[in-house]
Length: 386
Image (cartoon, rainbow, N blue to C red):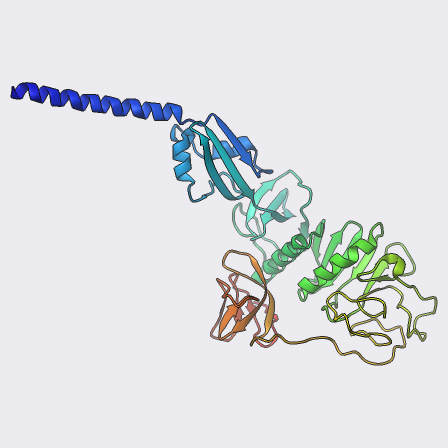
């Protein structure tokens, strides 16, 4: 009797094992990727993304892939992706939603080296992509795939990333960002060369450039923003291939701009200076960022070119923030993202809403240090060159 019971138990175990095996085969056969819909991709093909999810038998199993990418991890073989989300529509049908990293710019090193908004090199190729500015004149070492762009200093990398992100944010389609011997910056947009000067007030310069560019459509020449700080300065534009300069008022149409017929140095109290892009110097023109109720008639703009015999002196509008501490226009947080209008409050680096900026702190010298180890003077907010 005991021998029979033992045999029954053995048969039951074999039946359970066989059932589990059949169940395993059923799962492996039934839950196989036979269809995958991919959304949000432009640089990686749908086939590349589907194949990059995994290899082997498990790499094609919908249940395994759903578990593997439950937290949105990114495979190493898909460097252009910033996020990935997998959903199972049926046992054999996956829906894959991806977000791709934006290419911030590229350099030419016997081929094209593309990097993202964090400065990480994503691709080294002979293919030239449209809509991405080339960086020239910068001191860059030998590029390594998936590493940071090897600039000569962290300050230079910060300038490149700050400017590319600002241009992207303001939807300015630049073709080239050029650094001069003294690190002056020139941005090429179509046939316009925008001279930005040194790495200061970049946010104000790019924002004002965005407002002026529509007035220069169809023209070629140089837009001078070297000394612009957003405090009512006059900006000049010199058309290319022309012996004279034309006036365009910032924030108004080109037809509203007034070009005086008097020679430079004459008494032009109520006329526009030749070759200037006005930003609040005219009674009927409001400068971007200037108070609407300001009356600028007959006053000399700070930083405006000498040429008009203007009377009176206008003080720049430089009101200080209510919170304690100097404002630092841009810093990088621990995610490599630019955070604007940050300041120090009670010894902590905070954003405009008073939230602490991760990766930024005040060091033992009292300097603000961001996630890229850029230091700022606590009294002026200016970058300290390392």
